[in-house]
Length: 280
Ligand SMILES: NC(=O)c1ccc[n+]([C@@H]2O[C@H](COP(=O)([O-])OP(=O)(O)OC[C@H]3O[C@@H](n4cnc5c(N)ncnc54)[C@H](OP(=O)(O)O)[C@@H]3O)[C@@H](O)[C@H]2O)c1
Image (cartoon, rainbow, N blue to C red; front, side, top):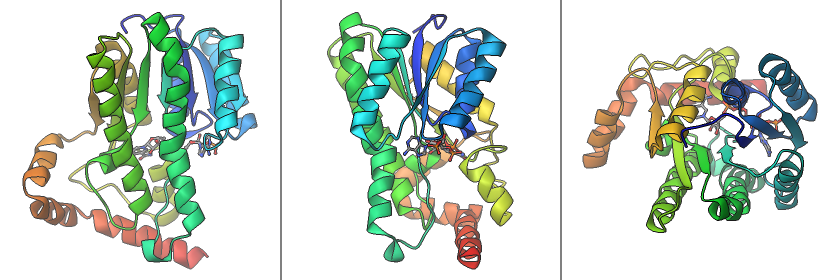
């Protein structure tokens, strides 16, 4: 989709972190926004800044993405109050670091509901309108964790692999039917300043491995715009090139594990778990 001005987008997880940066970047392109997350006051604050700064229309719909009825309400209110939906940015997600053997079954189910089922349900709700107008783009926030794995993150890694698989299959189906509607995933590595990793940096004192580095949240937001404009399949957001490593890991998985170990990914997970145990 080349022209973004006056398009209408739903962004989930827009109350803080990377989601609020995606909202800012889309608003700067003239996109009208429907912002969703559970914290309504935080969403209102983001919305007010965007209205003042960019003059776009911004709707706030307090939504728990694990609740299907609330997703239906989000779509209905967006259509009624802003108009037909052109863009869906599935950004909301939960991340938990824990020993899987000790994990809470209900928490695991919630991780899957927020990170996978919710985005799939929301996509299912907006797709008929997009197909009818033959215009629309769905962007799923995945992660480098969707290509690899780090310890103590079974739920998160599973959901990010799932989002890459879902996006690829959906994109293939849309291309097969000759539709202009499309889907892409954006896959950041470590993101600094705001968001789930930045919180671990301040709570557990961890740093991103030198081999990978870290990206700014605005780099992730610009990647969202880029995949929509250029209809890219997947965009990895990382300062160092990682595709050669991903290829090596695909060809020789044990070599991949060895490199991940050398890069210090395990040490980050272990430090976070250690600090969380001390705090409880
Ligand atoms: N930060 C990183 O280093 C990094 C790296 C790779 C990929 N990512 C991906 O980037 C995306 C954004 O991550 P982030 O770092 O910005 O996370 P974050 O700071 O934890 O923010 C998560 C957002 O999701 C919302 N959310 C959580 N549960 C929800 C629910 N049940 N219903 C609706 N909204 C919910 C939160 O809002 P409420 O609490 O108000 O509901 C918040 O706005 C995620 O998909 C993440 O996997 C992040």
